[in-house]
Length: 232
Image (cartoon, rainbow, N blue to C red; front, side, top):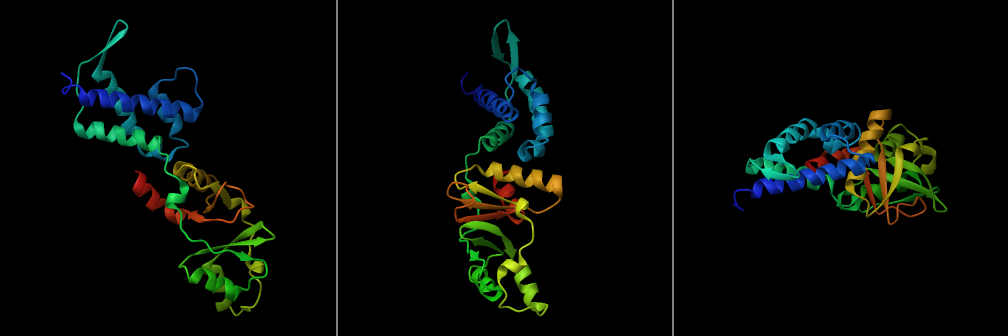
């Protein structure tokens, strides 16, 4: 009997885990039907959005697996292996504790306000990078891309100019995250920012997520497809 109901028990455990995650995500303390939780969470969570219809189907399947008799529940059906494995996959994603640092691009080269365009170009060229954070006395001034540096020189501007002259007012598109923060925090940040502004944000990963700390990793929307492929 235990073997026969193994998939059902695993399914129900994963279903309960997902329900807890959705309630925590939405800060719900009172009972909310599972399908409504899914619909609300899908607005702000990439994993839920990508699996929204499937999760709603699993709500119906959950009711088919369990028969409520008085105060007890009786398992009356057994889900397929593939279904059980898939709902466990989604539950694990919503409980993911993988860190942003695990997915960030490293190492990171930084410049100060007096670093020249030429020096900045070689700083990120030597590591095959694309972005150069610029600081002044420990204060973050902004990000410069390899395209900006190359374009500056191609257009005939002096390579001896300081990189601070290339900084655009886009600090709002850069956030700092602690290296131990969940990768799902990064996915949600990218998702919300792109939807709200249409701009491509950047995450600078530091030890404790403070702007005064030097970055040890970088994440951008270019990394999003790689992250989602690994997670979803």
